[in-house]
Structure formats: C-alpha cells, structure tokens
Length: 143
Image 1 (cartoon, rainbow, N blue to C red):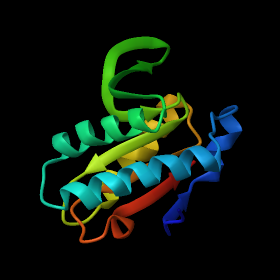
Image 2 (tube, rainbow, N blue to C red; image 1 turned 180 degrees about the vertical axis):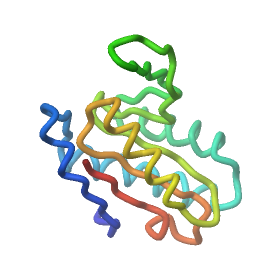
Image 3 (cartoon, helix red, strand yellow; image 1 turned 30 degrees about the vertical axis):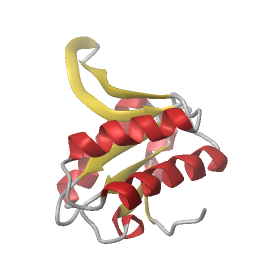
Image 4 (tube, helix red, strand yellow; image 1 turned 45 degrees about the vertical axis):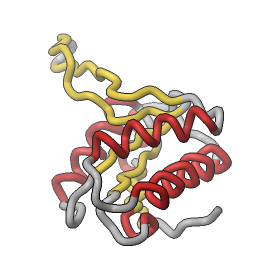
C-alpha cells in the first residue's frame, strides 16, 4: 500500500557516521498497520490507545517493535540518563512518534530530528492520528 508522505531531509547529519536504515518493505508494512488502526479506531482516541493498538497490529503482522523505549543522552561524553522515551521503535531501525494533535508543529519536527540523531537512525515517521484520513497525518522525517 502506498501512502504519500512529506519528507524532510537533513542530509548534513550523515557526515557523523553510518545511520541505521530499514527496507521500504518494512516501512510499507508499518504504514499499513497504522492505517488499519486508524481505520478501526478513527481519529478521536488518545495517543496512548493508538500506540497500544499499533503494537498489536505490528505483532499480528510479525513486525518486531518496542514501545516506550528509553533512550539515553550523553553530554560531553557523560551519560545524562534517559533523555526521552521513543514511542515505538520498529526492527531496531525505524522511529515512530505518534501524535493526536490538530497539526504537527516545527517543534514536533525538531524533536523527531533530535531523536533520530540520538538513535543514529536514518528515518522516522510522525503519525498524527487526529486526521480524517491517516495519510493526511503521515510525515516522513530523514536525516
């Protein structure tokens, strides 16, 4: 299933080493799972419900994923502890940030870019479930 996405590419960050990437087939499966959740539950439920439902949908599709993954942050080589919790990490290579908001702000986008840098992932998706059609709320973010 093909869903149009808006891509934001910040290629200047590639100079800092290899980034983990994933296959288009995996992404297609993930976006299909998210669409199935939205189709079943609609746009009105909170992020936490969509997150749980998406984890079930991914498991049914045999796509490995972890929810609320703690990501440590280092500053000047020193561990600061947990910097954030990733909503969902798929197959150790794809970040999903789920939202249920009127529109994705530049701060939301900056947050995901920072998360991708910390994870050393090439790409992630912001999935805003508060849209009539989920394809209107999918935003691909690449670094």
